[in-house]
Length: 89
Image 1 (cartoon, rainbow, N blue to C red):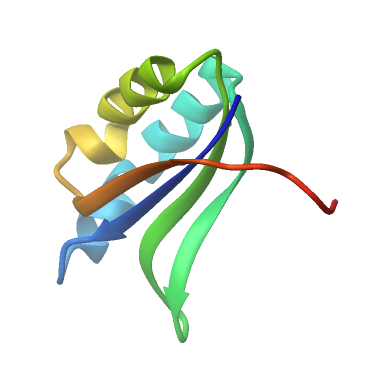
Image 2: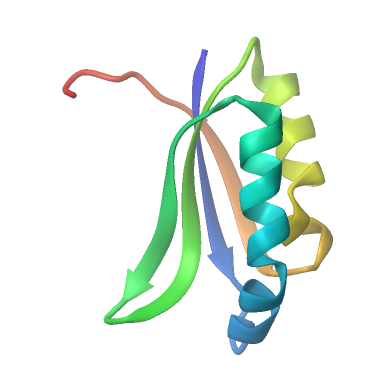
């Protein structure tokens, strides 16, 4: 099952993002369920994340999301997990 995780950073949280980036990227590598990922942008500023998860079910996506180092650091204002269907690419 593909799940789109769309997270919006809290205002003024860029340093939190930068401080936890290495741990976030290591988590992505360790878990092996991320097919695509990258920051949401406002100009050059990172303001959130888009992560496409390939997981067994929504419960697995929820577990992944709460254990993401960014989430544990309190980076996000909001996180949405939405079933997604790949059509192109």
